[in-house]
Length: 262
Image 1 (spheres, rainbow, N blue to C red):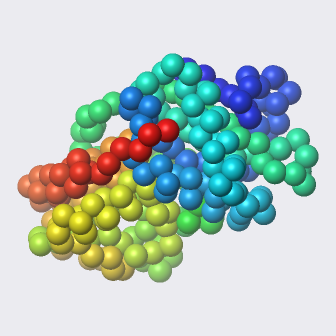
Image 2 (cartoon, one colour):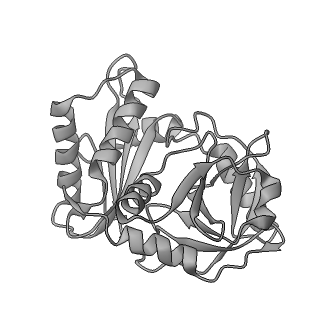
C-alpha cells in the first residue's frame, strides 16, 4: 500500500472505522502506467452508474473533474500503480458518498500461470455493479482453493456461465472469441477488448453458454484489469485444449487499446 486518501485527505481512525464497519459501496480498479490508464471514460461511467444505483447520487462533469483530481492527488509523484476508487457512505447518510482512493504497487505485467478453476453455482447481488458486498464471492473462492483449484467460475441457477470471481471469461470455439451472455459485470477490460477486436476485424460474438457446452469449447481465458488474457488450463476436471490462440488474439487486441491521460 502506497497511499490511502478519503476525499483527498488522510482518513483518521474514526473515518477508517466507519468505512470498514459497513460493507456498502462500489468501486473501480485502474492500472496506471506513466500516469495514464486505459478506458478512463468507462471507469468514470462505472462509478457514475454505481453512485446513482447505490446512493441515488448523480455525477456530472464537474464531479468527474473532481474525481480525477482526487486520483492525481493520491498518486502524488507515483507514475505506475494499481489504483482503486471506492464510493463509500458519507458521515451524512442522506448526503453524497465519500470517495476513497487507494494507491497500491502496480500489478505484475506478465500473466500468472494458467488457472485451474472450479465451476460453482453462485449469483452475485447486483451483478452489473462492481460493489463491496463480496462475502459470498470470497467464500466460493476459498472453497475452490480448499478443493485444490486456483479460482472459481460462477454459473447461474439457470445453468448459464456468468463470470469469474474478479474476472470476465472469454472462450474460443475454434474460429472466434465467444463471450457469455448472462447477468454479470461488464468489465472495462472486456469492453475495451470487444471494441478493439471490432476495429481490428477479429471475429467475436456474444451468446449464452450452458455449462454442458464447456466440454466442446477449445480454450478459455480470464479477463481482468490486472491481466487482459490469463489462460484457463481446466474447468473442474476438464482440461482445455488451448493452443495459445485465444490468449494471443486477446493480447494482440489489447496492445491496440489507447492510453488516456489522468
